[in-house]
Length: 575
Image (tube, rainbow, N blue to C red; front, side, top):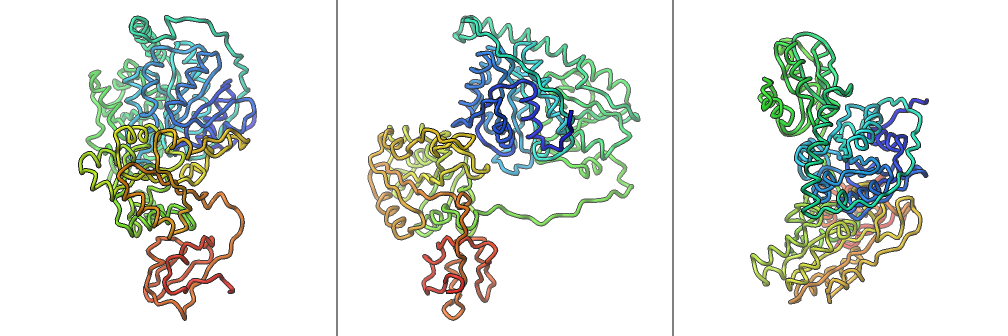
């Protein structure tokens, strides 16, 4: 078979397809998004973007019970959303195999926290595999389906950002056919009312005991023999240890739950000093210490952020030896793109001095200078309930200066229920739905309100305005955010109301429009250097202190800056 250079995410997608996966569900979330984007290109896998991770896992459980090997993918915070079906899915078990891929984000490259998903495996009693490169990501998908079907249990495959987005060589294998299994009615197994669930809990404990025995024998947990310094590690940390300590004895874990305690005890007896190198929480360390194995771990390593070869060198190697250090790279903070429709909204929120509860998505970047248009950001769908709570705390007068900001994809993900509750509790703040016609921050995936499916084919289109109306909201306005006068008038009117209102700020993401537009320049004879345009925070507008310049390589011709220039100093290039 061929060899390919694949991202970890691409390897997972191809590994799932080659292992006979027939159905895949996901909600896009960095660093997991490319898995489903890749698998959507395979005609022999039925794939879908779902409104949220809970729906994705519920659908995947349904398809595996229906007899098809199934895949469900999400990032770590998405697993919180899917936790409700997860715990019961472990009781239910499977018919055909089910693999749940969860991508953790040490260092929070694109996330609001650093939670460690290994504890979900421990708590839900779901086996968890953890690959350390693209080859293992590919191979472990096949192993995951085999474990799932042999032991009647869903299986986690956990990756981190570095595995998801790093490329390495993959040796492909022959594709498995995995025919659809027959479905047989079995209420005792699939209906989790208390009497059945109690019995299934017993079955789950028996199944995980069998998986533990498997972990003790499996070759995915192996020893790389070296000197009398021992290291227990897994995932990307294994690569760091191999680079930093090529002569050490390494116990490489391919399965992080359940751990092969007896096998690790045997390894510990062969070394003088034993370390655990793991990112985030001391999950492996605490488990081994509870089993009576003396290890050194978080005394040396932080529970925050990513590890690296240099960190392992500094903590575990001879500090008298000079090691090459990677150069420090300049900080590159995230910014909204030139022409982003969200920029106008935050410019106006700041101008009107409104308090804004924010949400997850591109529009979160409106919290940064110079716009500084967001006061809070908690989680997907959290902006509307948070505004509701703030109104409860501060009163209706405060609500006249309060808005909740949420994107179109996020509104569908988990904003609708919050809006229903806000109507039900007679809230009076204003909701802004920033509809840019895509799931922007994760790479422009379609959702039910775009009118297209995962493959770009036409699909039924959710009408957001009608959805809002159906929740009971009476005051609904649709406005182009680049019409600043209309936007300002609308916000003043709606925030003054004594009942809930919704403003849909509707303009497509600038990256969806591929047509070339004229760029703009600043007429130096008219410019008074007032810096009004700089307050937009557009990357194309450069503050040179004594003057302002528009970067022609970045300008997309959105014309927003023209709207804020009081001296009409911004003109089309060549005019």
